[in-house]
Image 1 (spheres, rainbow, N blue to C red):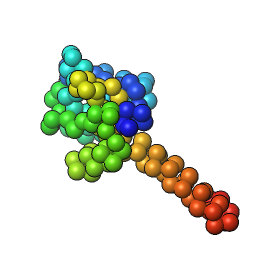
Image 2: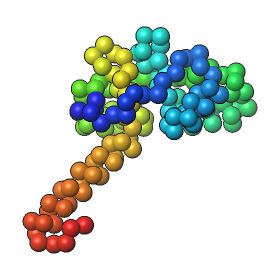
Image 3: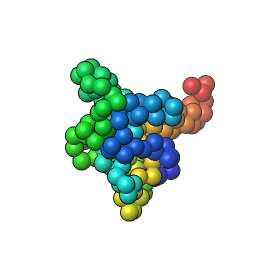
Length: 142
């Protein structure tokens, strides 16, 4: 289940957080994205370091004056914590995003899962399969 592998808790910010504050939070928390939430903890979107770079800095806007809410373009794609890994990979592919806020049954953010998280998990699992096959075939383990 996604709830078991997602990063918890997600690093969040409110829509009125400035891009400068968001960048500082990302730097101190060592993450590349924040889940923008409403006051009830429901996701409104995801803002990445790339969003700030392209839509604020490169656009000549002042990061201390731009609020994250202005960087949100569409309803967020989310996944429930009880969903499976294949569900997550399908959503990522269908919507062309790299991160999904993970929500509980009440729709509140409990974590975030990224394409990188899924690739690491799948790579690890494939490594276990390869080792098992190599053992069964009497070959050196990879």
